[in-house]
Structure formats: structure tokens, C-alpha cells
Length: 182
Image (cartoon, rainbow, N blue to C red; front, side, top):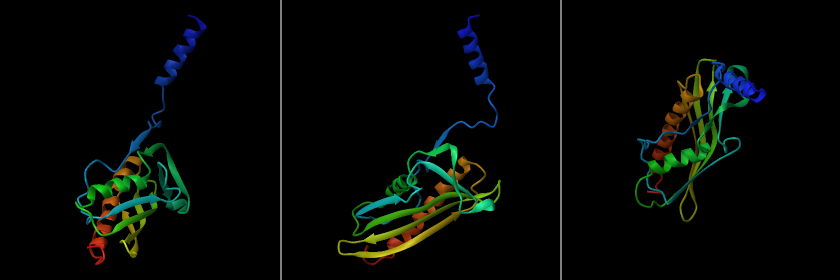
């Protein structure tokens, strides 16, 4: 066997003996189903994320160790920045027609928070502002904690989808209650 043939055989065999703990890279989004909640019609809607929630990293916190420490999954990513994923869900949930107000959302937290190695929750925090043609109508913060986010990225992504729907539900009720927007 030639030297290059032996090297190829070694590489092939090394590739088959992978560690069971090795994780294949995976990409997640919030799902393809339209949210069950309906947001009143808007003139325009935008969602932007503040750093570090403006990229595709899937962030988590190990609260039992240090709740202010933010980490990300090495092999798992969002399909787009969380603000874009939330914007897509918002557009799917928005009613037909053109409303009187524009909605701006600032995504301030989008993490899976572990209370222990086996248990976590999804946390989303946003700041929402409504404006009409004349001025700012109202603004408010929305914070949602979705329990049962599991112990891995896939379970966390599913919990983030549920939490996103809850955030949209809070925003829908708030927009509907604004007299300057109905």
C-alpha cells in the first residue's frame, strides 16, 4: 500500500470512530406555522435586536453558576438573527389591511436560562413602541418566561417558539387597547 493510500485509509477509519458526544451542527427557527394569535393591522412593523442578540448565535445562561454570564451553543445556530425570526412571526400574525400605527420592537433578551443541568426556561424581553403619523402613542416592556425548555438546544428552540407566541399575544392585546391605533 502506498503512503498516500495508507493516509487515506487512516483518515477514513478516524472519521468512523467519532465520539458519541460529538454533536452535528443544527440550525433552528421558530417553525413554519403561523402564530395562533392575531395582531391588529399595522401601518408598519420593525424588530431589531440589541447586541448580542443581533446575530445567529443560540445564547444560554447557566443561572446556577453565574446568571450574568452569557454563552452560546458551539454547534447550533438560529437560521437568522432572533429579531428577524420574531419579525417574520409578527408579520404572519398581523391582520389584513393598513392600520393607523407603526410598531417598533427592540429585542433585549432571547436566551435559554438553565436553573440546573437538566432544567431550563426560555426568556424573551422586548421593548415595544407604537407611533401614529403625529407622535408616539405608547410604549411598554414585555417579558416572557416559558418553562420546560429542556436540557439541549432543540428543546430550547421549541420553548423559544412558544415564548415568541406569548410575546406576540401580549403585544396584540396591548395594540388593540390603544385608542390612537384602532
